[in-house]
Length: 353
Image (tube, rainbow, N blue to C red; front, side, top):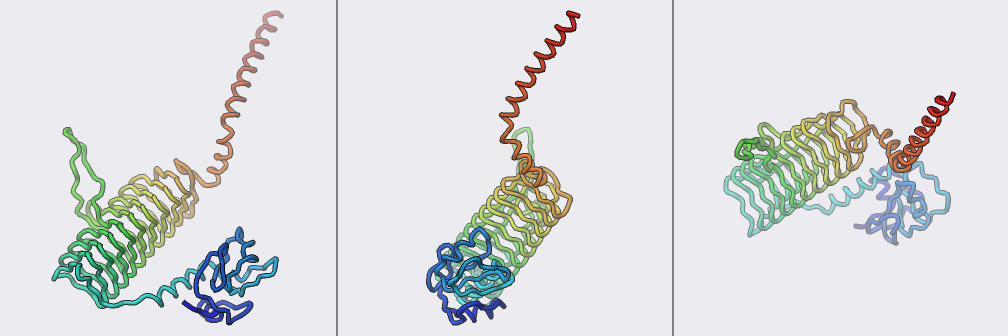
């Protein structure tokens, strides 16, 4: 890539402060900027790097007021974090090409229907009556089962497994080795052991969803497990059978959602959060890392932390107390001993009267 500062400003609807003809050819982090690179500054913790940065261009917020001279050309935008995301997307789109390709060692069943400019890599398999939309890429070693429906402009990375009958919308990205449609964990206890409950449902993934590597989304017992529009799942996330994840909800790595849980829209889950089955999570709930949610969250916009999870402010107050518990326990025992001694002394004095 090669852009001038003024061209980037036009793409981002920003303003240039410095040399509009400055040329950049790569991206870099603010702490490791080098000549020819473009960086962005959003977190105040990194402000000191702005004054030392050797990059030619830095994207900053319009509200940023430097305390020292800045050698780099600055492009001021409303939101530098969103701006760099838009720029990365623009650059990636320019590099992206769509052309029909079918690897000589791939296998596409004759009854499958592939749209225009579909890429199928070597050792990929597309099953009977599967439907794949225009400009979708199915990379090497991926498995697309019978009767699967995949929309347009999707990316299925190597090693992905999509079980038969699953439904996937447009512009969905599924990273390496994710599994879509494995059986839900359903077993009925009997006198002789556990009897498997057949899982005959599907998974429905709506438009603009991204699923991380090694994530598993289980099929429903009946009906469908749903990932609604714009959901983003990190690596190694587990979504159990019959769950529904609301639009634009995001989950960090190793989140586990037990069966039949309904999660609202625009929720955020930190890493390693666990959610019990049959819970209902209100819209815009924010959950801190490693929290455990044993029951439903009914109030929208709630922030919770801990295991079992409680309101965020109370969690941090409790955490401040928790580290002092050993000393408090020791002090309490001393006080109990002193009280017992005082009571004994009081009883002795009472008897002597």
